[in-house]
Image 1 (cartoon, helix red, strand yellow):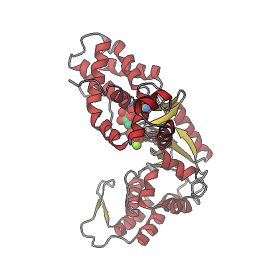
Image 2 (cartoon, helix red, strand yellow):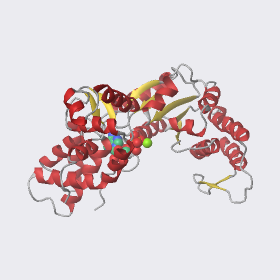
Image 3 (cartoon, rainbow, N blue to C red):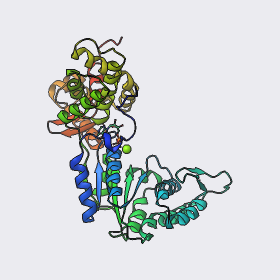
Image 4 (tube, rainbow, N blue to C red):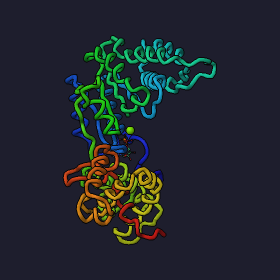
Amino acid sequence: MTNPFRFVGPVAPASLIDRREELDLLARAVATGVTVRLAGPRRFGKTSVIDAHLARMAATGHRVARVDLSRVSTVTDVCVRLVRAYQPFGGAARGALARIAQRLGVTIGAAGIAVTLSPARTEPPSDEQARYLLAEVLDLPATLDDGDRTVVALDEFQDVLTADRDLDGLLRSVIQHHGDRVSYLFAGSAPTMMRALFEDRERPFYGQARPIAIGRLPAEETARDIDATLRRHELDGGDATAQIVALGAGHPQRTMLLAHHLFELLDVGNGEGDAGALAARSLDLALHDTADAHATVWDQLDRPERAVAFALADGLPPTSHAVAERSRMPRSTLADALGRLTREGQHVEVGDHGPAIVDPLLEIWLRRRNEVSA
Ligand SMILES: Nc1ncnc2c1ncn2[C@@H]1O[C@H](COP(=O)(O)OP(=O)(O)O)[C@@H](O)[C@H]1O
Ligand SMILES: [Mg+2]
């Protein structure tokens, strides 16, 4: 049986757990002409929410596009991503896109979606040419005056700053004239960079988009949805479902990874034993999958940040005397490290109960550091 619990890439709108409130806010923003930005840690489901939102907008007659800006490193990359995203517009857009693509040195595939670097091309566009083409392709949705409104989502928006430190200025200067013909939605997973783009008075997008947070999933509904999916496959998670949901701590991708393994264990008939044992086996498999990723995070932390991470995983106040003593570091050093980690927002976030580790599996991995792995 194919495992219904996907943990890589966006989930299909029909498989989305909850997010009703976020989707309503997004729909209202389009209706009222408000620009919004989706903020949340990596793998919390921003792209999944965008896809569900765009599907809804398309169903109400809007033209939609999701521009994936992840890992763009040049202005030409940004152009290519836009050309690819606007390709399905067809009609009047087709000619303009083909011309821009040709000047970029890319070929649009027969299906109209694939964009590949054209081998015949000798010289890539200069930076100035690329910026000119970018302005042109950015403007495209506003030039389609067939009465339909276009909804554009710019995903992993913070990466435009990798391509060019001032590219937000060019983007703003073009799209500010689009009025309500085009609605823009920005999403990003690097909180510090997104804040820099939208909350720094010096930057062109300062105060230009209302933030909507993509947070953790509600436990009860998540467990209910996972149970329903299991039952559709004639499997019964019993109490193990609630237990893996608790282990996932509302982290969408980690919860799906745990559910994936629970499904696997039940499906091959390894679901014997009590619920606790089943949940524990699912957890071990998920930890096995993610161990390399945790080790990479660990490698990137400096000594005080590691002390803070350990303290958080162990449930100790990270800047307490006890932690200062056991890590042999001044409390001010620990406070600085905690400040850096929360500001960066990738691994530590400030929740209702103070600072916490974002990824529940990383937290368990840290807590289990003294255990001998089998
Ligand atoms: N609302 C949700 N319901 C179910 N699974 C989700 C949800 N949001 C995220 N996920 C899980 O997280 C993974 C990553 O989602 P994605 O949308 O790519 O996150 P992001 O864009 O924030 O990095 C998905 O493959 C899925 O396993
Ligand atoms: Mg994404």
